[in-house]
Length: 440
Image (cartoon, rainbow, N blue to C red; front, side, top):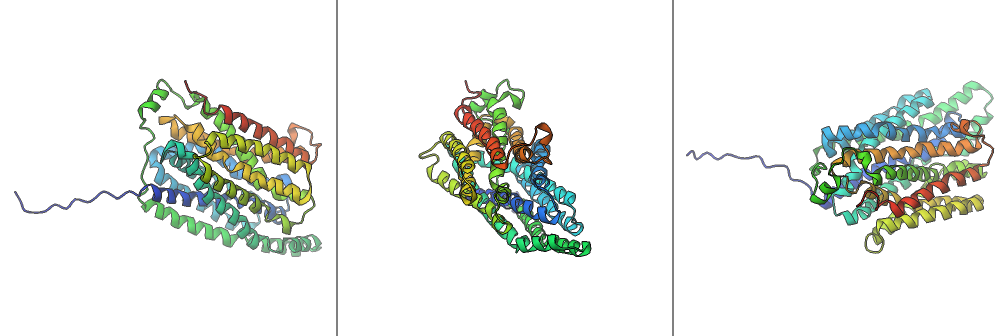
């Protein structure tokens, strides 16, 4: 035999549970930061593009409709790329969407801004389709809600910071600027003021694109372990035996609708709170920070979840409590005015915090080889963030996108009540029956 030594290349070392959670936590931070910029953008575009309420709410429409359109394709992409590479690709797509803000700002084109938001939503659809089931499956089933609550802290910390940072840059002295623009009698002077204001958004979004591109490269090079959702244990294999379609799982199909309503009320509490404040007569310099109030309340809710789930509360029980709080805070906001009403809307963040961590694991439980497509359907439910705000604005605004469905003859307070309470009641129903559906 030859004495020559053959050096074998060692397989790449995979990161452990804690490191995997840290990487996924970074991704959830990105979700929160990009998503909750929308509350500031709604008010920014109202001024820069001279929009009414319903037009400004097309921000949420464009952003969240991307989830509806691209969640199913995302599941097929993940089948080809795997979870890790799919997440890296999602980051790059969000970066491209951010760069579209440069020509949009230069042209002061609202339609181009909406295109950028749609592309960002597409990247997030892929990112969320991969990362949410990953977080649910990577550890014990009993602590899935706790894991997603921990990740939610990352998400909502970013969400609380995002509007503070962006509004400080793009809406600095918002009232003064608005008065200058409205007082401008010369069309060229007004256009210059609006162009200067629109240009403020370029720097932040270029920075976002650069950071996301770097993170995509680092994630691609990381040793994040891959998860094979096509491999089923005996219990899951027995539960999925004879199943030929993901639609044969009622806990999933009704869970998609539950996610739809949940995201709708979350967007109403976070992104619409500024518009609600303006309708109450509060100034733009006050309302530009209201989204942060909601996100701070959500952050508190996630901390409660980490401390109590599963030791004191099950995911199911936390969902029941959350839905009831949602009804109570919505009614309290309707019955009060000024900052009291805003406080109760912000507290909806507390009510909403533990809903996603409870609904998502409940809905994908037992899906086995259908997990990727099931996750994609649940991510499609995020489209509630596009539809519910438009239903709300259509109720009291004759120019609303949904106003053709009904006569807008009620005020914004009643509209908020009529939108929110039915959503919370459905979530409450699912909290009682979701874990029993499809189980023998």
